[in-house]
Length: 141
Image (cartoon, rainbow, N blue to C red; front, top):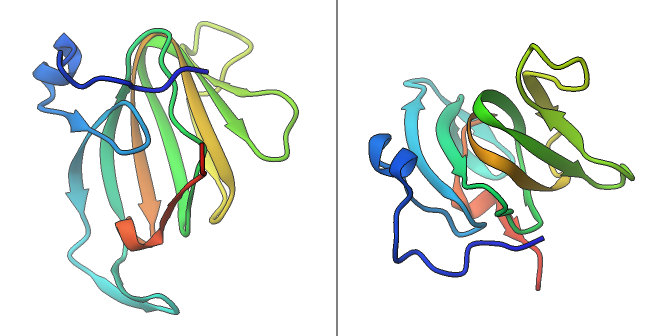
């Protein structure tokens, strides 16, 4: 599953939504952060946060884990394979017109995950407690 190898050309959807390269691959921008802080065992965090995340056709993210629950919400237009350890097959985020897809998927805190795009696909990810890079792990390649 290929990841982003070059950030030289920003895709048009990334331009349109002002997205920047993400360390796991793909493109992102934080779109919302809760005004309510809370204390976790990892320190103070925002109660929740959200991003737009774009994977261009044929690209994938690296295996990664987030220390908080993460809700993926499909915007389209493509299909997103969401691989979760230890599940043997991906879950699919896609159009409500397709019977084999979901429009939102929850990834439990600490679960290893990766995504792969079939067509350009834009999603939102809502993380609760809010995302902090200190709580983010990338697998060794």
